[in-house]
Image 1: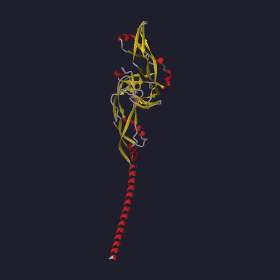
Image 2 (image 1 turned 180 degrees about the vertical axis):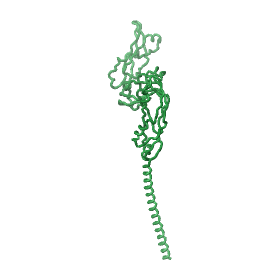
Image 3 (image 1 turned 30 degrees about the vertical axis):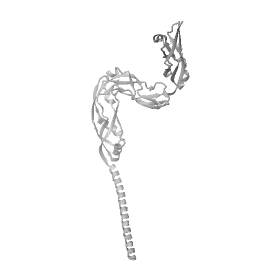
Image 4 (image 1 turned 60 degrees about the vertical axis):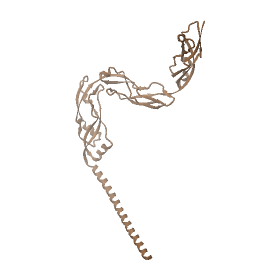
Length: 338
């Protein structure tokens, strides 16, 4: 029995070994097949890219050469659909991630026109074929451009030079504020638009941009708000924000009695008020109590009657002081007549 069992065990191991060898050979053949399939696919792909193809491409378009005092009454196309031919690799490159922007110069359409009136014209996009091909480094041939003709009317606008103001917001780091008004360069521009708007237009604002976390001088470019109907001599201006650190201070300011008769003696309790304010660090030493004037009007004392308190008014504040407050706002008083 022992011999038979040993023989069976040996036979089983032999079968398992043969099966494992077959699986390994099969795996090896599959890997080889997949490898050659991959190589074939790559060769086919590169061969396909080397062939010539004809296809359509969406080409973004912008326009230049339109005089400031003119505006198109209809929207100009934002893109052309162009039919192109070229190698598959070149077409794939431009279609996938490298589509350029075409800038169409409309200057020739205004030559010879009476620029005091509205006028209509037809823009022939086919005339731009060679310029578009140069945009693709002449690697593609442009066969067709759609739309081929753009019928457009340009309306004469009124022009005016107006001031530019900052229309956004500035958010500072704690303990900082704006030292001077934002500096805009240029501070005025030429604007063109319908007469009804231009006649009443006095200024133009920047976009409502928010400048955050400001604690040091910063200069940046910011767009202008054309209100959807205006042509601007430039679309952006430079803005400079100069911040400064500020602090808080309190001064004792004497109360002056206004309109006091010569035969009346007024005693105030207290006769000074505390003026609290904020000031830029650089200007701290420039503010003294003489920059503030606190008064009590004698006429109001007579109207108030006995037992009432007098209201303190701060009628003058130092121009460099901000967020000024006074304490107390009312004082007790005694009137002695001589």
